[in-house]
Length: 357
Image 1 (tube, one colour):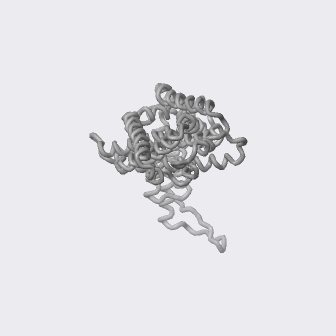
Image 2 (cartoon, helix red, strand yellow):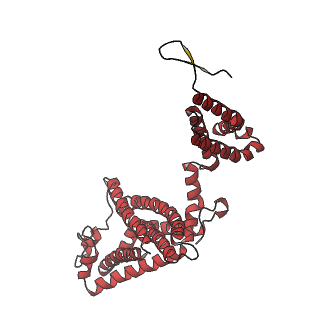
Image 3 (spheres, helix red, strand yellow):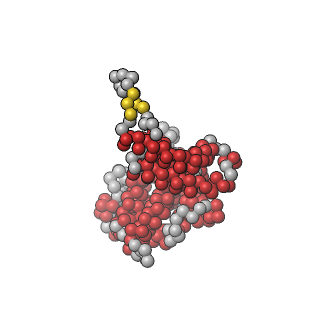
């Protein structure tokens, strides 16, 4: 067989290609010819899928797609191993990437995922950590009672528990009128958007910390919940002592039923990871922690959304509404979250994304 002719850079002289180049060219051509039909079929299927022409794809092509993908991936591995020409490698690399996305890639976009997540996925994940939620609720109630009793017995505890930004005029010995002014309705919403951003940042930090500390077998999470709720207990005692307990509960309830619920869920998600690490069952610790972490991450997405909503409630309706309206809003939000998380079930429409606890 006559060797291919190469042109030199400086002239038109024809020379025969070296034997090793000729052999490599023949090997590359033979490799292409033996597999080119499968590559062409795969590329045709991918082109129709990418253009949204799903109705034009036959059942045989759908069934053949995984096989054609594995064939192309095998061809790419062989091409890299035998150092075939760069054009073949680039073509196969692009073809395999496109095929992988269609075979193993995500089947839905962000908005479809969010619709499915809010349409039942979040509530399902929260129901799966019900035991940890009960533990977190018990600890939060215990922390609130502890803060109340400590301050009631010795008012010096108030200054140890309550941060300085809350203890401006809210301190033991303050008059009823002074404390009542802290609950007054604002005349306008000017500047409250920045206040809402600050509140979200603060509450999100507490929730994320409660979740992250769960990796230490949940013990630091429990201590954090106790400490934060002891602050609430101290404030409740302060307003109770001034005869303003119910106005304070209404003032707090507008955002508190959402905010405290979010903190409870964040703590429960952290406890869930810690509990699974401490008691992994028949699985390894890392496998149990990975499954619990996936479930906890889904809960934390909902927690962040709740905290955004709580910050808006805290900055606007709470500051602009009266006591009765505040109490109604707080009660409504509590009922809404309970119904949404524990009574709203659409499990038949949701793929099993996680293993039940």
